[in-house]
Length: 393
Ligand code: PLP
Image (cartoon, rainbow, N blue to C red):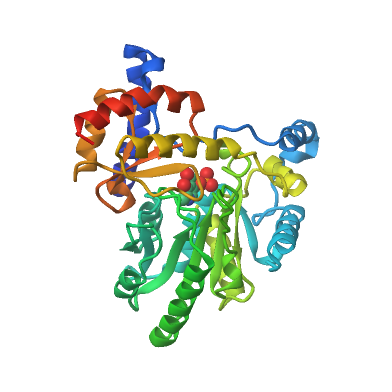
């Protein structure tokens, strides 16, 4: 018999994908120049030249295409740990680092390793990346969330303390955040760590903090993204090169369990076991080599900041409301009417495609990706103006 849960996942597209496909159809009808697609988080800047050159030279190496060990080649794991040590002064261990097909695979296997009973819960902060729910449920647990403070999209610690309970095995934190662009401050991380430590004592079990960090390199206005293993021992880092190197289709990232974490070795082996049980085999070997050689490279994200400035200043001028994002490449704007879905449908009739916030765990907002061309933003401004007038902003 076909598994109904998997069928439901495969047959219903995410809202983002649905809108993206709609945009392609609409472009055929009204011309691509009249469609302003702000839906997808696909990096628009080129990958660093060093990365391109390394791919070209390494692809010619006949031995590059073989399987690597399941956790990834030691050279790449060492390079990752050395890099993080030099940058953050905190040493991760190559023996607790596991290369993955991006952060998505890293999160999926980490959750699988941490959830062992249907009553297990994973807590995150809304708004959040919608796939957390899919990965958590596939691992056999359920996702709960605490809403952020909507004036800043920083953690609302009262809401967090109300939401956490003895069934919570892990907390997922995503900074810089998709979709809000918030970068959690050092104060917030310290406070979160203190609450989690107290709750561990109270509940008598570990609560692991999973740091989902694909946007760690995309920061604006001097924002600093604290390296969370320095603040909280039971940390698992899920990193990805998708956005940092503009290579999301190549599928490369890693999971690293802090060596200070409780049962670090057992957790690491459970993560490896989860990868094995899902048939992941190993991360792409060519890109493991690319990471080993280009671990300190990063794409130039200046254009994301310029796009943010252009979009936020125009949205604000037109009467829309949004918190100025300090990282990642999204603007999270308040819908002028309570139903973000209704607002998105109206925007669609103008060829403007934005993502409603309900799948991010919060109502009444829309997400606009700023990893589009600056030209698209400029061309969309008269349309945004028409929509603002429609709502009397
Ligand atoms: N986490 C967040 C917050 C994301 O926005 C994304 C992708 O957009 C991912 C994880 C997955 O990224 P990848 O699997 O490409 O590393």
